[in-house]
Image 1 (cartoon, rainbow, N blue to C red):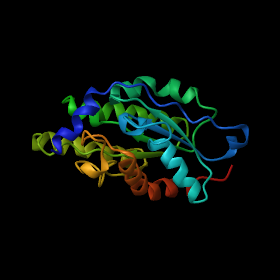
Image 2 (cartoon, rainbow, N blue to C red):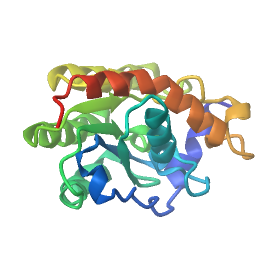
Image 3 (cartoon, rainbow, N blue to C red):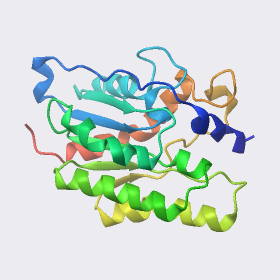
Image 4 (cartoon, rainbow, N blue to C red):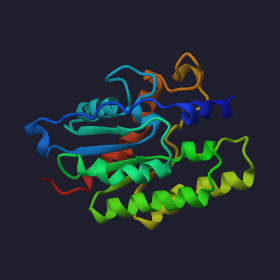
Length: 217
């Protein structure tokens, strides 16, 4: 059942959700870029129910008036993310105070060599570092039915790159959600509103820690 959870992320090809549009007054508020695939794009969910809007709402409940930009593209791989990173950043009103990088699940589903995944993510993190943008790496874990050697190589990519680039790490973006039907859409595979809520609750402390380390604007 757990292995089947990953299939839609390979097949999904829906447009990315619209980015949050900050007002002029929000220009000096913390800006966060959610850069990922269907998990950050809010696959199968209505407007305002995906990861970016839920994270923004959670931060504001905690007294952080952040603007979270949704840059999730369903079905995206690390190669796709690498190709679109620069124009995504250039389209923002300013450099974000944090980039959450959540990519890799589709590489794993397609059997991409983890060395290729690592190279793409390394390039993404290097570009963010070059621009002075702090990063939170949202890690992925390979499906447990895959070859153990592949799993070890794939799972090791995310913590290794976080260490290399001195980035924060959230080890598994789907912690507590993957394979849990109560936290997925009716197909039993994609995170529903409650599933995204669980993801946000899990990652929120790591997001706050990175933001708290940034100098006030």
